[in-house]
Image 1 (cartoon, rainbow, N blue to C red):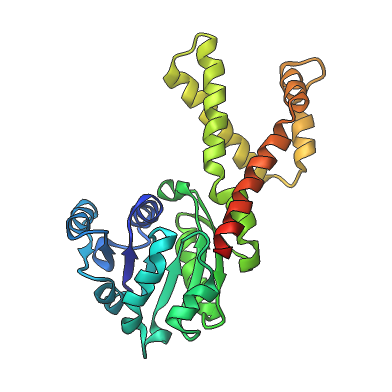
Image 2 (cartoon, rainbow, N blue to C red):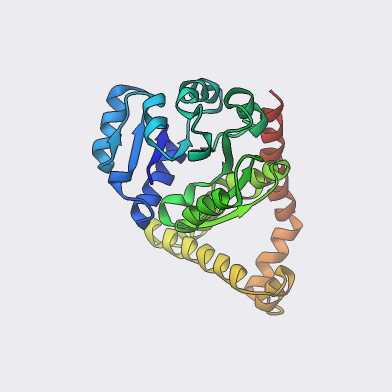
Length: 270
């Protein structure tokens, strides 16, 4: 099976690197197309993959076509690959990761017989910890969806969700690595303010967040119970949690996540 990547920027590049690192796909099965001939050649050399000269050529050769360009360029890319899909819609799957670009808008260009999977990934793809939603059109079969989901399971977790929920997905996983980095940075500042080196503070903070996330994933306890379990009365954690509650920490995070979800919905309406 051949995999094509149109646009290998931040997210598209992270996904490609993740797939290659996990062994889910091999370099000889990957085809790339960058913004220019020079960038395409550089990407191909960097990852030892095959360069394409056009979107149509890439789509001709690939069975699964990942579109990782900015939202405004997606229609142009779809028009470019459309000739390669005509009459071969059953053989190819188009996977788009562009925020605000709906399945319906893609079908307007490619037609309803094209197999379309709209995904919303996040940055940890290249370290094997992606969280990605998958929304599909009616042309995509259960086997198609399974194939895409299993591919993403090699670099993290994929969940099938209705497209109507994609704005929520953006708020809670698509954009949230940035909020998490801010949280880690604040913890690091506490470390350095109290005499730690920046490197030690980063490791302590990041590992604590990683460990806490794993506990959440592996426990059937409620988050309230998990918080209470480490808040010894009169202890250090209780003191921290008290201050964070007074400052409406969770409410502030919620407002940020909702802003991302609202912006996603706004982009979809344009």
